[in-house]
Length: 415
Image 1 (cartoon, rainbow, N blue to C red):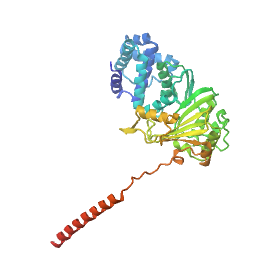
Image 2: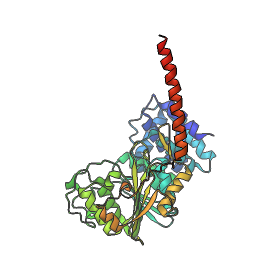
Image 3: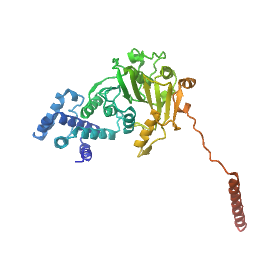
Image 4: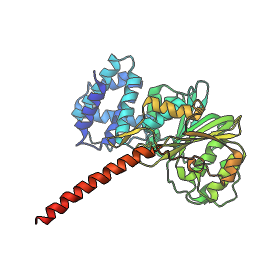
């Protein structure tokens, strides 16, 4: 059974019945119910077609884990619904790896939708290789989206927060299919004053360009650790996510955050935070990533690694902007290129001209800018010229020009 091919067949089947995004949500719900109540779902297939629809709605309404999904809104026909249920039931009976197969299938479906709340394969692969094993560790993501990356990291315990109810609902299904322990709930992480969980890892790709209202966040505990005196502007979301991540860590914890490169050199509130982070020796590395790293945006991104137990006083800067290629408008990084970025960040390739360790004193002299352009010297390499050969080439060109000029003069005289 080619489940990827089959599920896209059902996507096409429902295209005229409901929006594609809602049909994928419906598949997620049915896949989840088949995993956790195979007998109850199988019994629906013994009912007449219309009763199948109504009983499925009742089952969804009775499961508090599925309250995010409004089954009254879907308009799928009873025949199509029975076909879809049958597909997942048969898959469950015939496949010992049902959960992994369905998790992969649903992830690919959501990736195909290019939603704002899902990490690209590029992002997930970089985090997977960079963070490494999360065995025995607690991981936090305050803006998890569909949770693709934190779920893939397979931490001992995963704490997920997101402001969108539907997004959290889908993430909980994907986490259930992955078989990981997860504390997940809807929350506006920047506004709600949630206590620190003292986690080992924060791994997050928070929304870019988020506007904040200072009066809603100014009293929160996560802002008190760095105590930035500048007024919080509406454009300070990156600085808030950074402080919120640090607040969630334990004393030995590390944070991996995707942020826009503008934060690396902007003034005002952002500059004051950068100064605090640098002077407290919390910045481990900054990596510029290629345009198209995000699934639905062509902007360049940067990967900021913060370490509360850092053992050196240098900051590693990596320029990975020219890695990868675009295929059909999509950034593609090979496994080798992804590993190359990780090796540069981890210091396994110190001879490359794409990496440089800078001291706190040097960053201080650059007014705490953390952008590569302040520190990398890109030399223009000119080929050495052989004067004799160049003079011979010039003489040949002059001779050719003289011959051509004479022919032109002769032609003009005949007119």
